[in-house]
Length: 263
Image (cartoon, rainbow, N blue to C red; front, side, top):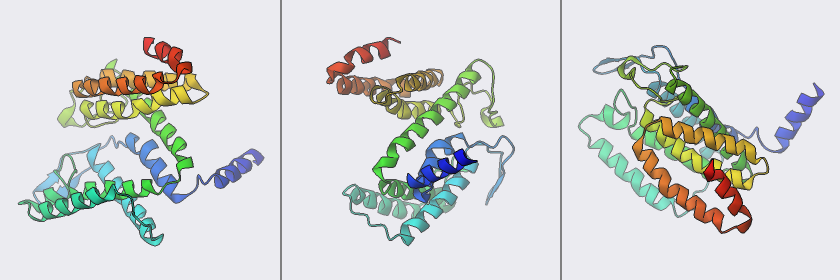
């Protein structure tokens, strides 16, 4: 009990119970794992959409989390003064105009019944982006590490699927897919892997526990390979060159980078 109490006090001092941090941590550490392997029906004007294990549950969670984040931003009267929000504001205006002028309003605002990537999804992502911009920099290492460890877990699931052991059954529409992890499609898995892999590689060169990030990098790279997403493979080539260039400038790390890429 004393150890748990000390851990609770330590987390509280570090601000790990801060609601902003918890939201961001949830989105990078838990959200990619959200799958409901049972029929999840949603009614549209045209009828009831077939069972959806991935898109619909995540859309609902995204909306709920984004509403909570918006309430926090409004309550704290968060100021937005970064130059990046200028083109982002223009983007929002164009989305609103195009959505109102769309011939099918439901599809424009919510998205197709099989994707849920309409204007509302973009707005939710923008809210979370604003919330992330207000997060303290000292919390970023924890968020980045959580993102990498979750990606490694997804990669393990994808590797098991590639060997014929499927822990995450897909819906009947795409039941013939091989390796997709906890993503709706292998292409999304490849994109997710190539997005998280650079962070894992850089942490390997920066953190003292190198073996840990060597393992996560190996797992994530394996997930990238079994995704069979050629676009993600091609995207990793320039990324790897940038990483090599960045690390090679430090002479002390040159042997490490040769060792890393030789594996």
